[in-house]
Image 1 (cartoon, rainbow, N blue to C red):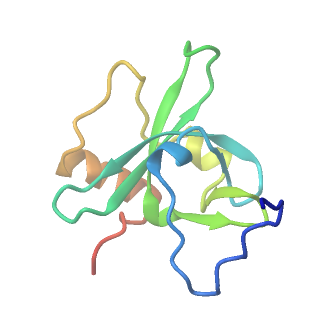
Image 2: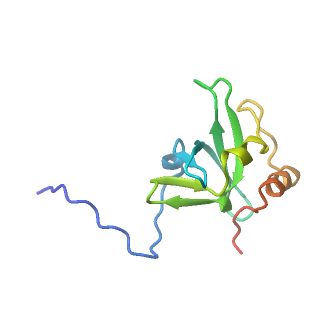
Length: 128
């Protein structure tokens, strides 16, 4: 017999996994609670297997005028209270951040990565 009981909450300290597909399209909030944009893509470091950057989509309507902003994954945390991802930045910082148009993605090489890291002052997560 089926019931409508909710699944029990994960124990404190338990690993909770989610798929990349479920993360895409989620709102990204800034440290002040303002919406910064939505998660468009996730960039993995092939050497470590770790998530390195979240590409946050801002602006635009129906894909026109959109900008993509790579933000190091280490700048994010999940907030159960907010029900989504919070970046340790605000709109003002995002406005001057490295960005690109959806149709002209940069090569995510060491030089570009250093530019993003230097701007935000935080490195991508590592297996360290």
